[in-house]
Length: 157
Image (cartoon, rainbow, N blue to C red; front, side, top):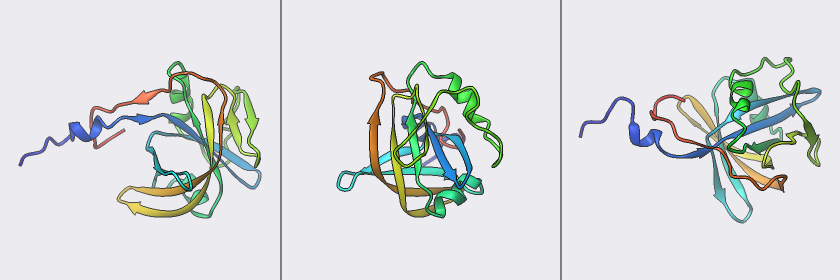
């Protein structure tokens, strides 16, 4: 069987677009996360893939809670803002309206809502680390259609 080098079917697996927010002491940041999937009902769990070597991966591996802010269809500007990434001490939320979750995580006021997550375990998968996290809080802020992402290739973002 011959496969296309771009893996076009894998690239067409749809995913939501989230901004993962996290704190480590006084430092906090956000990153674009498109590989998020529900993984269980009881307890409610999700999986999140983070590229290996990112400092956010290290923070989650160390057990830091994080939030997944679900973006709406009309929030494409967030892709450019968070897609470029941030250095550990670079402010990620300048110019954005923020609130705090019950545990103090930054959450985007304009997001559809957020899942507050506690990491439980992880699995290394090539160039990404897959985290299994329990959803400890779920807040709907706006009732809007979510942004959905479909790539053309299963081998790159």
